[in-house]
Image (cartoon, rainbow, N blue to C red):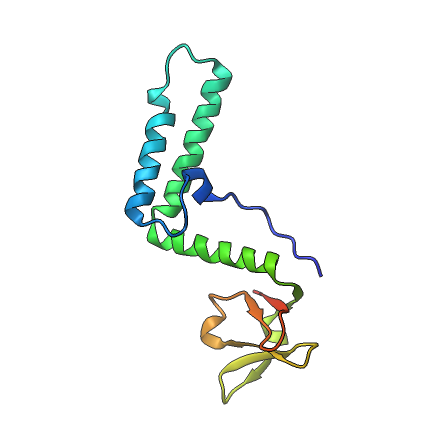
Length: 146
């Protein structure tokens, strides 16, 4: 089954940063770009099309900072990026609703049998944070739908 995802902008690329950059490094890269592209810093004789392009670039830079400059939204974004990368690297076996998985009361786990004979397992506490689950035996992945 094909998984369709909206292509999300790479906010690190917008800032010329890496996920491993510290908050201070991210801020420094944002400030440097903001000074270059801020509408107040534009020369008066710039063509209207170029001025509009620069304003759009500034808005993109500002949006990147709003996401990456906040610890909570950065964490969410990084998680989403990791999931997106997993679906590119790992074959998606199927999409399934949590209630369609078997509940194991003793182990407090939801499980589903894989076609290879292995299992997909996710604990109740992980279900809010995790949407992709790898088989414990092969490289197949399922996506848990909410």
